[in-house]
Image (cartoon, rainbow, N blue to C red; front, side, top):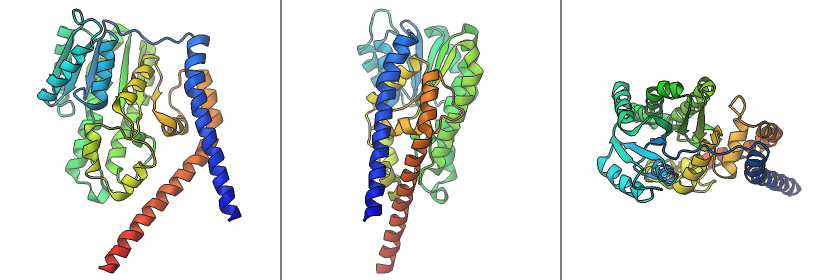
Length: 345
């Protein structure tokens, strides 16, 4: 009993440290250090062209709405024309200046054919102006253990989650470099920061986005182009509702250890972080901990944040180990329950 009590006490202390660190980073470093000591100011997108893939719903639509509120000309991209038209009307309604701003949509499968994507975005820039900010939000999730995931499902996630972002970035990056300015956002997931049961294929595509983001951040920094990787937790979107249909029990129970957040909250954080050039964009305590743990050789834009991450990494590793043991216990309990049910039949 004493051992259990000591373990519980240690866990409580570690949780307090995490929450305190998160609050310090979020409220002191982000607001005081950046804005007052270094004078970091968000980039101005008023009158600039912002393109959002996956912009007909969920996080993408919320980002497009925020861009319109800030005076940007907005183009949303998705496959469903009707949903795009509905979303466009919503975005027009919130424009800062309806008489000046332009809002368009483009029905396109961005992960299917690079040449089609390149032509579509090139034509789009001729009518809407050069793309200043590209926000890649298109994505899909099909859950299942590796042996239960079909090759077709794997290919679908590779095309939508990875190739869609890769193609769009490749299509616009040369013109951004010529303009010596730009913002690129890749919407990944917390599943890009740790492997999760039932997400073998999905995690692979999200980890790929993280590698892409880190690589192009290094390539584009000399051209004044910032790269932000958004790693949100489970988000209450239409895509998440579909994802729930294929989740194994183990995956559901592991996912339930963190809260479901609204797309508006994710979009607001993504938007703010992208405008100040922050590489990792996260929501909540778990996201903060995971990005610190995975910061390693990732880009940083503040010496204060670098020092803060270095101080916290060891502590967070212990907390991460606790979570991993907890997840393994969930998996073992599910296996035992299934075996017991089989024997009883």
